[in-house]
Length: 206
Image (spheres, rainbow, N blue to C red):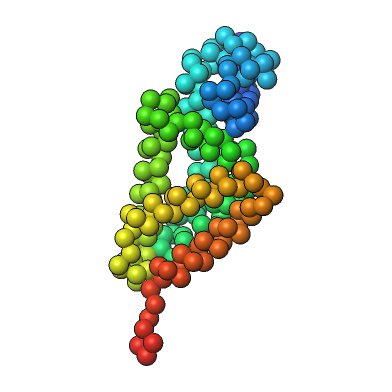
């Protein structure tokens, strides 16, 4: 009976620590946030945080996994159709980020902290970039196969461009949210992207 009673409390405490880490990392970054500060936020000691996560790096990776879990449903819905429909839905990425500003900032702050190959989460961000790149390549290639997008488009280069836009747009918005309309920026970019990539039937044909 005691084990059954303790487990829910332990899970609740672990969840509270994870939530506190997400909030603090989004503002101070991983390097600027000690385990003691996270523990203080939820009323546990440094040792209490270690009890639940084992190390600071384990907590960092748990934060990144939680961020991915919260976003997974949204992003799979956006990209699953491929081709033109997926491109048209790219502004939904902006909407999701605007609805979850803390998670959006968390990702950007941690990404910039982990550009160096020796950084604790460098491997995670590198693998994620390559995964997103592959997803975008498949999305564009499916549009070509359906005859929606021009066959001469170099999908790998275009996928790099889209990633660069999304990361850059988010940084500009976080830096100057009063001047940068993230959703409008996405919509404008996608409008131009569609004009560039869409297969146009020559006049007089059909």
